[in-house]
Length: 593
Image 1 (cartoon, rainbow, N blue to C red):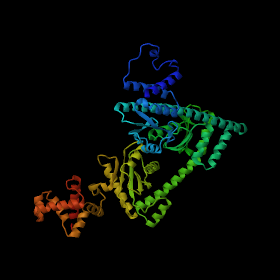
Image 2 (cartoon, rainbow, N blue to C red):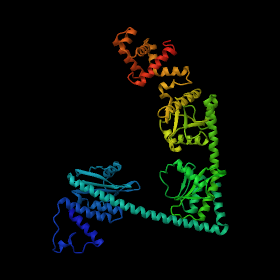
Image 3 (tube, one colour):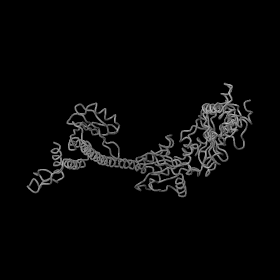
Image 4 (tube, rainbow, N blue to C red):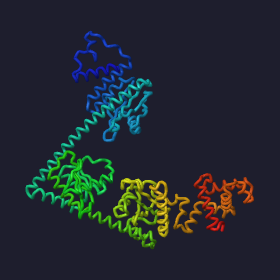
């Protein structure tokens, strides 16, 4: 049955292509005329031959529905199979294809959608074996072929079925590409017609007022309408028929109108962006760089952004250049206003952060933070940022603020002579801000120091010192670039200048606080035991003798110290910090008193 179906398919296909004489008995016309007959094929070879003939018919069609029907009608060529259902992916939805005029069972359709693009088993009454096989191409999932069998297929039959599925998916990919190409041609035709209509409309304006006056009036109207940057690119695209876009001076997209927008938009390269800005700034008027016609938005000489047209076919003429220049002129006041607004917000933030770092009245700080759009009632961290190739000027402060926003940090910002300071309302990610700034600046030669959390505004000046301390430790470490957290410095917190009695207390509390509390509640001597243990260099016998206890009692106490403090005496860093903490507790803080 499978053979006759595939042969009749082949005959229809071959006649349509002119490759099979009428009256032939099959794909071997010499045998029909009494000539030598081809050698007999093995069953697997015969099935494979039928699949090859079927593939020709599949690739001969550009209609996706017809391709799926051909595969369903001839699935028996691969083995003891029946096509239970077929589906095509139409705009993200799996649309069933009728089989002999019948739609597939709801349970089958439900199961196919549950598979979410994966292959899987399908249960059909009366069929012990069933599979839903995804038809995938480079563009993604094209659809599904649901196949059942009255017996479990052999390995060879499964391989033939997989070959059929691959042929069908490949044919669908080709048909999909043909359809997309056809749609692109229609879209291009539509855009050209639209452009022609716009140009004809503009010609009428030129006839009355002159092209330049018409463009100027149009752009002035756009600027006055309050539509912002998007209104400008929309008008420019309408005038030229070319995709129009605006980037900030760092190369990040702000607005795009027209087809072929890259998704995602390419991440800018700081070095190449600066080279491009300098190259355009040296020229008078728009400059072509690769497939773009570019002009700078720079009122009073300061570059605020980039306006460009994507002109891959080099179609721009003098009218296009004129429209681009007028659009840039109409955009300059808008970007100037936004820049001034950002600077005002930055000044407000700076003044508030400067006062917080120096110490300020809480009520005033809370009121000003509301005006700045920031909630100071949460725990905050002070973050200090320093980059070797950047001075801490306004430009670098804006770069740090932009990178912090990009990684989701809500913060206030100010700057000092050689670093930028952030007051952030959450603990920064160990690497995110550093990596974002490395991309922004084009170099990894930077360091970040982060304080411990501050639960009240009075602590912020002290937290600022902690962040500077973390930065300084990072600067003098072997890996001098990256992010350091003050609460992870351990012993380094109390080494170096500027550390007071309070810092020593905090260090002791961090490492011995739980043991001190336990001793106080239970009238025990675990901290003294730990101190003697370190004094005798970890020698069990001498430590036990100095405490007048048995060696097993000492071992029990040391285990209790591990359990209560959570610190491991076998860990080198824990052991060092605990030993220093017991020394500070005993000598500087006065021991049990």
